[in-house]
Length: 112
Image 1 (cartoon, rainbow, N blue to C red):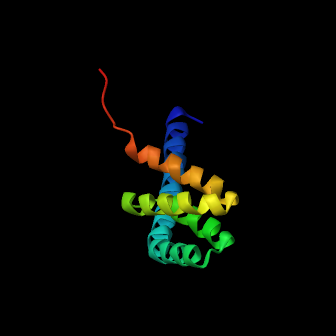
Image 2 (cartoon, one colour):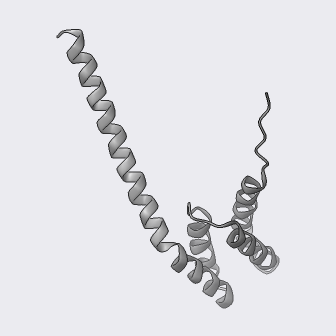
């Protein structure tokens, strides 16, 4: 094999792999976007019913969703702060929400 076929083969394979990952990422993002509002509503309903499994399940889905808004995160964190006193098994979810909130609060400054 000469060098040009090796180079072209490498470029074609790398492009194919990147297109596959791009397609999968867009598919995941679209799915998360379509489920965000319903998952948030189900989380609030689980909080109202004090359903611990539902709070854990839908809380994780909402917190790790890429469409999460800061105002929703603040509401979730405040509700979890209150619920953790009564249900200590929600502590892990409260920590996840707290750490996610820290990521939003970080000032991004450039240091030269």
